[in-house]
Amino acid sequence: MTVALSRRASDVRVIGLISLAHGSSHFFHLILPPMFPWLKNEFALNYAELGLLMSVFFVVSCVVQASSGFLVDRIGARPILFAGVGLLALAALTYSQSNGYWMLVMGAVIAGCGNGIFHPVDYTLINHKISPPNLPYAYSMHGVTGYLGWAAAPAFMVGIAQISDWRIAFLSAALLEAMILLILWMNKSQLIDNVKERHESVQESNSSSKSGATTEGTFAFLRLKAVWLCWIFFFFSMASTSSLQSFSPSALFKIYDLPVNVGNYYLTLLALGSAAGVLVGGYLAAKLYTPERIVSSFLSITIVICLLLATGLIPMQIIPIAFCTLGFGYGVVAPSRDLLVKLATPKGVAGRVYGIVYSGIDLGAAVGPFVFGFFMDAGLPKALFIGIALFQLMIIPTVFKVSSTSHKPA
Image (cartoon, rainbow, N blue to C red):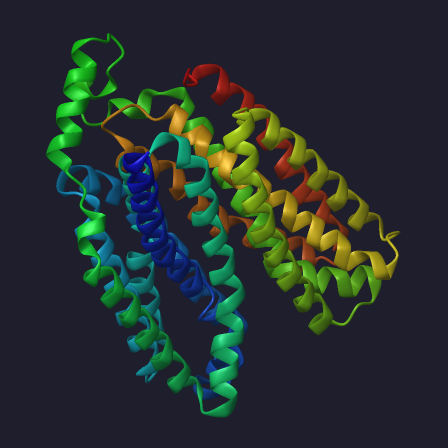
């Protein structure tokens, strides 16, 4: 009993630290866009130039995420985590001192490098440090802090910029990230990732199994069908989410004549609904352990809501409920999605697999808004919700294929 309680306490501490770092990475996804009005006036930029900053951020993050997993498997997750958090603080500091567009680009590159390490690091630590019964709860809390980071950034940045200026807002973000780095450093003993121990465990497993992917070479895992199915899942999932975040306020204005500022408020409801959904999703994943059914069921709900929004027939007073429900559905899916990746990951290559699979998130975030931007410019706002529904529909078959090629624990 004492051992079990000690183990649970250790799990809580570890997931708390990892979730704090993960929330800060999502916070940094949205420190730049709220400052666009200030930066536009300060440097006489157009919206295309400002949008390119986010494309630079996500493309760099995609490349770093795909490659950093190899480094995590080689030297361990903890030093990479410290480096990533430090780079985010440096990026905010660079933004605050910018004297022109190219310095903003430099800040976006640094931020992309810092952001790109988090999923390989986080999931390697979670899978290595958290006891199996608590894994779904760990995935749930990890996801919740990501959504809370998204929700907090605009209010934090705009609030400070309004009472001071945009440079102070970025300096404050840098200070906040530096404080998080200090907290992680003070608790570094909780984040020890014994690479040698993991490799020895893999060798023992491979000696008694014919399916050891790591015995075939560093890149052998890339031949696994489940890895690329998970990548497709993440690509279309994030393409949907980022497109909804980017254009739904404008689409609602054109379809329902809703003011854009009200549409932005609905994005907050979307994020809060997602946070609540992740908590419920963690419970369902732990109790049911049928990730493919959970994902397909709740994605079906979000598909129906998107199609209804596209019709223009939803009563105005129901739209906030629709966005809350949409976010809730996205959130419930997240822990089961992460569990599917865990089931599809061979031992010893967690960092590499998570790096490749989660690079789909960054590429989806870069591609989705770019594609749907053409529909919005063409005056086809309904195509946004229809396209998002189609993207989510394309995800469902991958879930069952991943599940059929993975082995569930007894």
